[in-house]
Image 1 (tube, rainbow, N blue to C red):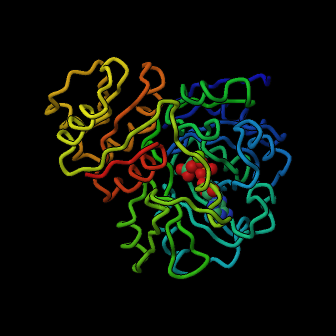
Image 2 (cartoon, rainbow, N blue to C red):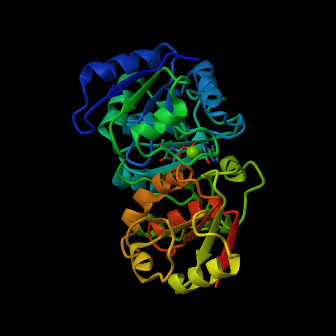
Length: 349
Ligand code: TXA
Ligand code: MG
């Protein structure tokens, strides 16, 4: 058991002393959970293999699943990566700081543990004052999401506390994160550039900035698992609450869910329904456990609530959850990727 110090800070104007203290922990080889604009990260100095190993241990993360390196200034990109294509450089100048992660050739300053021995490195500049200040002070930080491996990513300091208290040296709690889903990861080591994980930056926006087609493989849609080392994270169980999930993808979700529930013949006390506000209003079912994730027309809201709702499922005592899917455009692609990976079964009607 590690002694965990918890710092509650204002996200926009974080307490300088708290950040200096956490920077000191990082510099001396410790690990610190901190907020970003997407989800909370669990950070260690990217240059320290020993510190990075502690991150893997605290999360229970397989050592062959590499971490994202977080930077605070464009100049640091040249410390952690090599051979950066011109168009990628232009794109990050527009999109950073923000929820966009690029896969590039690894530079020598990054410990091999960070990239699980791969010759590529994933890099992003987070748009959060706390994350930026920490990196400015300590240098590039390697950080996966601050959840126990396989659990939904943490979008509040409380989620981090639940998973990481007693396992990390410090937790910086700055309330709820902005997006609630992780960054969009794009492999730019070969053309056509390819989405490894859809996230908070919509692909449509990326195509506009990069002015070229970007491949979206089935795996990125959450429909197929990656098997090779290409995107090692994708082959592991992800985002899953304990409660088994049935995902319903239908143009008429209320009707599809009603007939599914009838077929299942479950007692309504044990069944949770996770749906949009619109579907909740039109459902003709009585269920004690109805959770709404926001409006179907507001995918920003759905994405923001997604992991919170998945975590909530485990605390309401359901033995099965039926979840309504959303349209696969904009942030909807990220939402559907997470839901498909979390689902034990997908029903398309
Ligand atoms: O928004 C985010 O991206 C958050 C915040 C904390 O920055 N981070 C995050 O990290 O989601 P993590 O570790 O939970 O997810 C990173 C994903 C993993 O699936 C990993 O396999 C993949 O990125 N990845 C990292 N480095 C890679 C590499 N060199 N090649 C292929 N995939 C890589
Ligand atoms: Mg993660």
